[in-house]
Amino acid sequence: MKDKSAERGTRTGFTTGACAAAAARAAVLGLAGGQVPGEIDSLLPNGTRVRFDVHDGRCEGERAHAMVIKFAGDDPDCTDGAHLTVDLRLLPGQAGTVTYVAGDGVGTVTMKGLGLEVGGPAINPVPRRNIADNLREAAPRLLLEHGIEVTISVPDGQVMARKTTNARLGILGGISILGTTGIVKPYSTAAWRASVVQGVQVAATAGHKLVALTTGGRTETFAMATLRAERPELPSACFVQMGDFLRYALDEAAAQGIALVVLAVMVGKLTKIAQGETITHANRSEVDTDLVAEIARRIGATPEDCAAIAAAETARFGAELMVERGLGDAFHHALAQAAIDTLSAPDRYGRAFQLRVIVTDFEGKQVADVLSPPGLPQAGPAAGRTSIDHILDID
Image (cartoon, rainbow, N blue to C red; front, side):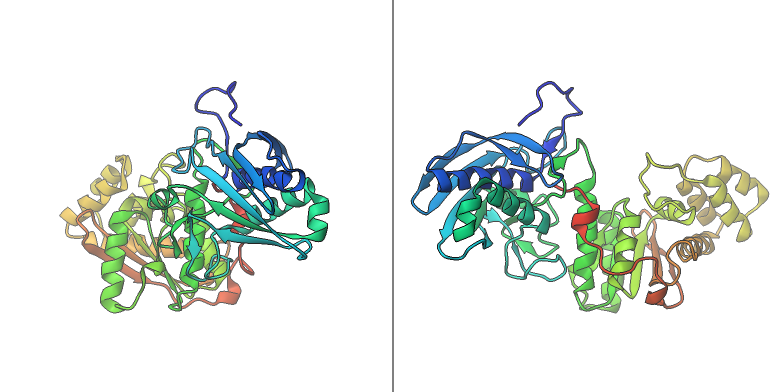
């Protein structure tokens, strides 16, 4: 339910998974007792309980129906206001079984790499467990004798999905049912982080042993043109818009044993990577223009130019000045090599994967292409497969 007392801008909300679990709990009470309640105290994955209003509750024989309207708090979420709708069907004699079906507006998994069965519903593991826990807690006697089929639907889910990266991840036909704690924090970036990790997981299953990490639309267009000129068969699944979340992307690449990581970047983000930042948002850290000046000094820039670069506010100033001086190629190459050296340090990623850094200017022209030695996956910082459900709180 909405927290009406909280100041706007700070209100938390609830994940699609938590809302689906609340609707399922209400519906199973209808199966067990003949009436779907108008509100329900539902168990969240984080162990807390929250009261939800229930709409459109009805039951007849071996079927029950309930709906919960998602409230996303003050998070800018395309699923805010979505009608998380659950239809339950009794499975006589299949004691304790809980199965899941994608109804209208819920996606179907079509690619490996998400930890979900290909051809099955895009309902993530934590929401599945949370729904099952609520069913068994609310109607234990019913589950001792029978199983339950859970169909989740989201009207207009296909439209909502267009605002997500689902299609790139091979989730077609609607949204995913997600969430790790059940709570959506206001203005969180968790959903984007989640899509980055999932994107790398899908890339790992594409069969090309490569993931190209880009910072946005321009660098992705550049990366696709560059890499497909060399390897036309590369699918879109190999290209992941990581935004500012380099650390999450690289951690997952190491965990998945991906052999080659390509970073397609522009000078500002490249400088932040070279200076050791792996969350590159402007609000998290400033560009170290002293580093830019040092790179310029190494390639032969004058002391006056180096001083001007150090005093500037942006890395772009230094890059453009070096281009004017005829040192642009050397500068971008040296800066890309510095980024590789930083990421390949023993206390970072070592040789967990091979790194290739391709750099574009603001007109989309390639200005550097630097490759590290081949990786040695066993030397990487991560071991085993990272599970998105354990590291991210998503909607």
